[in-house]
Image 1 (cartoon, rainbow, N blue to C red):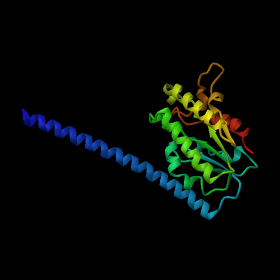
Image 2: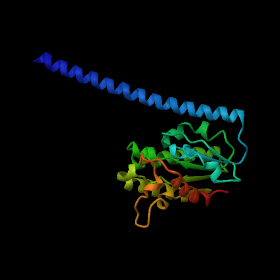
Image 3: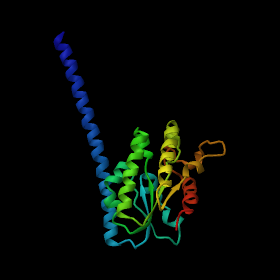
Image 4: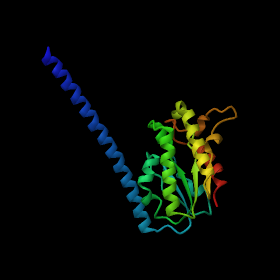
Length: 225
C-alpha cells in the first residue's frame, strides 16, 4: 500500500516538473521572439537611422500589427516599434532598446491588454505603468507621452470592469502630469448602447480589423502634432 502511495506521489512530482519545464520553455520561446524582433528593429535603425522628432508608437500586438500606421498619418514621421505579447513590465524592461534610442517628439504607448489577460491586478498594472512613465520622462523630458486606453474586445469581455478601472486610474494619473495625453479608444469602439461592434475584430476576438484600426486612426489623429 505504501509503495502504491509512493508511486502516486512520484508520478505527481514528475507531472509537476514536466509542466514547469514546459512553461519555462514557452516563456523562453516568447522572449526569444521578442529578442529577434528587437534585433530586427536595431538592424533597420543601423541601415536607415530614423530622423529626429519622430512620432513613436510602442506597445503590444495591436501596435505591431498596425501595418497601415504610416499611411494613416501622411506627412508625419511615424515609427512603429510594437512587440506582440508584451506587457507593461516588458516594455519597461526593453525601454532602453525600444524607446531611448529615438529622438521622439511624441510617444504613444499601448500596454495593459496582455496584463489583463494574464490576470495581473489593477494595482500592479498601474504601478508598472507609472514606473515606465517615470523612466521615459527622465530620458525624454521634452517628449509628449500619450497613453492609448486598453481597448474593449470579445476575448476580454469578462474583464470589462477591470479594463475600465485600469483605464480610469491611468487617465487620472496622466491628467496630473505635464505634456501628456490620454487617447480614449475604449469608448469609441462601443455602439450607442455600450456593446461591442463585431466588425472591429478579427476571428480571434482580440486583434483588430481594418475597420477597427480606422477607429484608432480617428481617435489618435486628434493627438498627432
